[in-house]
Image 1 (cartoon, rainbow, N blue to C red):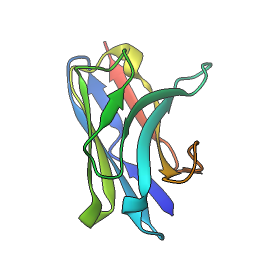
Image 2 (image 1 turned 135 degrees about the vertical axis):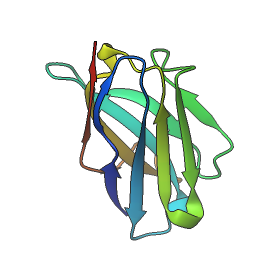
Image 3 (image 1 turned 90 degrees about the horizontal axis):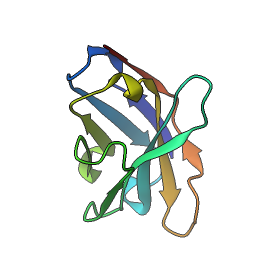
Image 4 (image 1 turned 45 degrees about the vertical axis):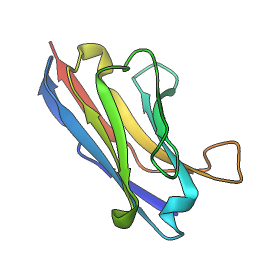
Length: 118
């Protein structure tokens, strides 16, 4: 599967953005999907994940209650709705795919930059 992330941009603190990740190639529904982010000088960190069926989601503590992950398997797309954005959310955001028979994410999209101004 190939992944293409989009939707990043510059937003003021308190604002919202919705990231999208479009998948192509192998059957999208066979993958758990995740979002990760990496700020300058920091390691990449987990943000959120959603199971292949969309019935189970998980979030890092830093975004819980503000971000919502969702997916539309018919459109081969996963979304990350980000509300109440904070300057510390500034980072490059990456989507990733984990096959159902694997323990790790093995396919990554290119990053989309999110910048939150104070």
